[in-house]
Length: 133
Image (cartoon, rainbow, N blue to C red; front, side, top):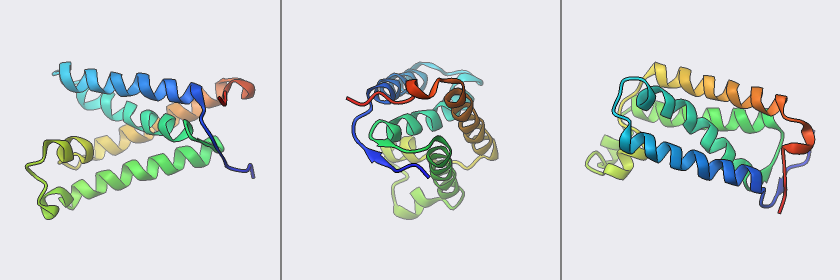
């Protein structure tokens, strides 16, 4: 198994920044029935993956699985109404970050996002995956 390395990996950081601003644009301007509910959920897994890989060099599969399990965990907190139980239901930030309503469709989109990560990472040449600064 590959050793986990910590550092700053510019390529992933740039991708994370681009995805973050894409998510902001979707949240702010997409008020449709496709891009906002589905595109944002698919991209959030890729955003978290790129954010993690910006500072941690680890194999693709374990990193993707960790991010996917994290996304599932956040979705499950919605099922159990964690925001309401914590008294944060009036916090816009908490509702936007953690979400407020459970959906199996969201979990499917997180899974598709994880599959997209693995596909793209396997297409890229190994030497192009990490550029450490």
